[in-house]
Length: 211
Ligand code: ZN
Image 1: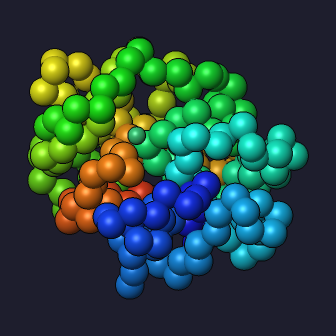
Image 2: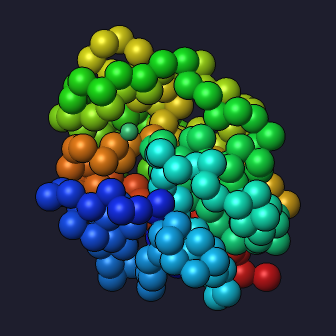
Image 3: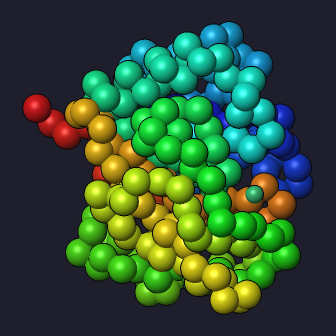
């Protein structure tokens, strides 16, 4: 598995960047290496990668179009793609879904988010409480400009009353894509026990199925 984040985004909460926090969340569950935009090939070395986790926020446009296409093709060929939080605007996600990924709105106010499981039999919901409560998160609002998900697992409620399709899966070619909304860089979301459990379940679900 490869955990990619644009970088540097290191802060007290994520001393090795978001990619390091994602790798920590999957420690013991998957073999994870990390990469970022300033690495050779913009960190997009997909050799041997079964699942690619992707987080970016300010530098989506800096990813070369050819790299985005390389990722999209790898997904169509069977690689899993786990898109986190502000990755909704990343080039690979938009290309694969043929959609803008635009939000109805957002607000950075450290408010409560409740992730309600709307498909309790889905493998990504296994072993999780309902709802998962995150004490401080950034709010994202519907409408989320994506095609109707093939798999909808979580819908979020925010303290301001908004809702959002926070855990959604799509299949493209032989590959699976899962979008998971939480993961704002200013809050300790990626240290949250149940968020880590979602990432572990999602990495397993996204991985290529045995032939
Ligand atoms: Zn954010």
